[in-house]
Length: 240
View 1 (cartoon, rainbow, N blue to C red):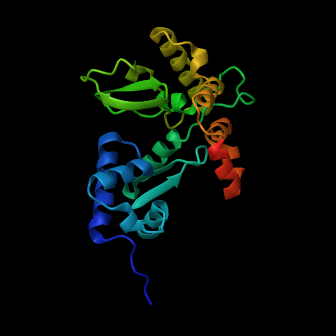
View 2: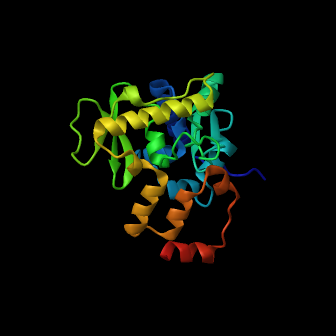
View 3: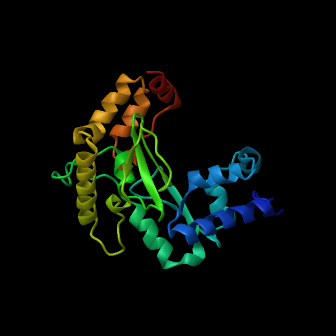
């Protein structure tokens, strides 16, 4: 007996259109989490559509001929999607995204910045937009360059966003990103120490974040892949 498809034809078409339009506009893969948001905005009931099947599994199962669905090895919590017909260009763009803040033991001269801060200075930005950063909580988003920004946020010039090129040495890219963060902090009147992963984790702890969230922030990407916790332990950490 044939297995009933998970994705209805109209949902399949919406997914392919969203991913293709994002690629054509930005030349970059689309975050799976963002795809889910766009589908929901477009009227797709994600629970009804995917049921107990994870979105990433459904895409790999039913749209493998059309889409590249990639979990970033250095950032295993991040999944990106790109049109398969983009070919080698998509693979290069995905590889360029797969960057993490350097570890102190590998690159002692480069501080270990908070992951959101590092991403804000290394992920591609669309032409005509600027990136804004809030420090409490730490987050960034892209807005139209002509729009006024909130006084609670600080602007990052596109010139300071250092995306990795295809043949660039990863350590050289990390050095340039760190330089951009240092310059931005100085020009913006932000103490660079406030951008370090360790200091932001302490702030989160004081603000009442769970022990689990603080533990996740402290672990490196390879450690996140290896650590497994029983659900009762997860529950206790969430309440701590």
